[in-house]
Length: 138
Image (cartoon, rainbow, N blue to C red; front, top):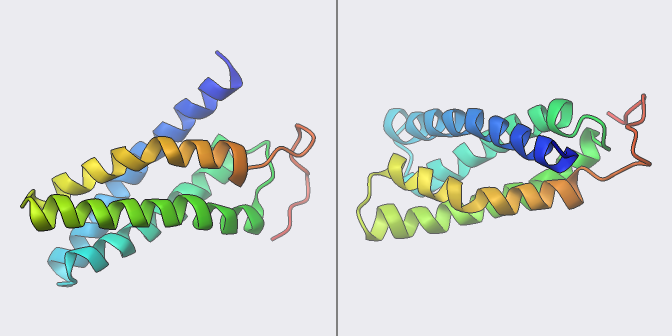
C-alpha cells in the first residue's frame, strides 16, 4: 500500500473518531447548553479540529513537520474550511430543509472531508527532507 493510501486510511480513521467527538459536542452545545444550532456547530467543529490535529500530528503525519506551526496551518485551512462548510450546510439542511441537526451535520462532515485531506497532505503537514526533526518547536 502506498504512503498516500496509508495516510488516507489513517486520516479517515481519525475522522471517524472525530465524527463522534463532533456529534457529542454539537448535542452538548445545542441540546444541553441551549446554544443556537449554528453557533453550536461552529464550536463543535473547532473542538474536533483540535482533536483531529492532535491525532494527525502524532499518528497520521508523524514523520512530517508538526508542532504549533502546523496547528496554525491546520486551523487556517481545515478549521476554516470545516467551519464554513458545516455552518453553510447546516443552515441549508437543518435551517431551510428541516433535516434533524445531527443528520445534517453528518452530511456536512462528509462534504468537507476530501478537501481537508488534500489541504493536510500538501500544506499543513509539510515534508521536511522526508524525516521529522527529533526536536520540535512547541
